[in-house]
Length: 434
Ligand code: DLL
Image (cartoon, rainbow, N blue to C red):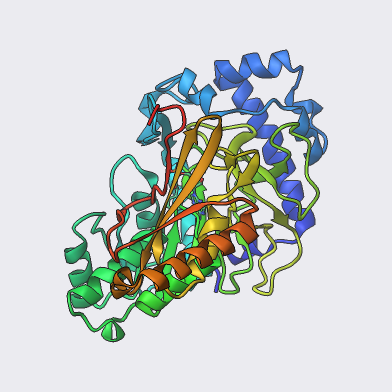
């Protein structure tokens, strides 16, 4: 099923011609309407008419999150506030948020691209969809909300929090599709069982999950939790919110909305283009956005692209599930460690649960990694030998995959923190003196 079949299955030659035309137009638009880009493009001696092929994009200087922050709050807006009909912002852990503005056309485009990914994932106008992302400045809830309304689904805007009530509504309203982070869905399924619900009786069949990474191992835990088909979609507030890419029923990569977002994958250090299939940092140019157009925005997300045709008939390039952020990568005693590698190891071991925490410390001149994970069976806590054996086994499996030794702490079931939005599993205590 398609939402906009003609565009989603357009042959690549026509798609690339459309992208080139839109790329030239957006470069001119940025030059004319955003003083920041006027200066950047002038300095780089790039003009719209110099862009003859899509690969000429490499001459455009990239834009970073710092560029948006430095012009806080509205400095990169290409339209006056009067033309903006919505403002969102990403919270950011430090300092000021990054602020984005949407014109009416932007909201239309946004709901179209979200509608596409929902239909690609299998949602229909028959679905009753609970949105358990937080409504507010975060783009997740309202983004999915309007896309799902556009396809005629029945939207229940519950927002995040109050997990017991979430579960009650899932049950009482016969919800068929759930929108949340995968980690929150997992937590909800635990609460459902704790509260004595018969999850087999739930009508849930589809998960539209996103906003955080999720390994295949974790995904199958989430699917078991609620007996649903879990799909992944990706986006970021600076680019639009959710809607940049999403999985179809074959779940073999996330289809990019390539007529609106032009992806590149580069080496994060040299910015040189990676070959198709090679992992690097995703850079995205918004081809049609009016409110805050971005040229070559550095997402810091690591992935790779696959241009081969998909069984579903969509021609738009697929990106791999995000394997991590370049700034989430932990450098421990000189070794690059991705939290997703740790997750794969932990979640595939039946004796331990799917929630975990990674604590990085500096001891003397050396970095240490502690992996805290919950036991499935708390009676093991009284069996010293079995506990020690399991601990060694987890540490051994981690060492095989990561190449470094980690301290493994086995905790009581349900003792680690649960998250209602993006899970924050890394606690980096280096440079904090703790
Ligand atoms: O998380 C937008 C979104 C909302 C996407 C709901 C999908 C569903 P931000 O809060 O700006 O926007 O965070 C963007 O989250 O750069 C990635 O690091 C991460 N991220 C988003 N989706 C995925 C995903 C929204 N499917 C940042 N897999 C991005 C892995 C994801 N990471």
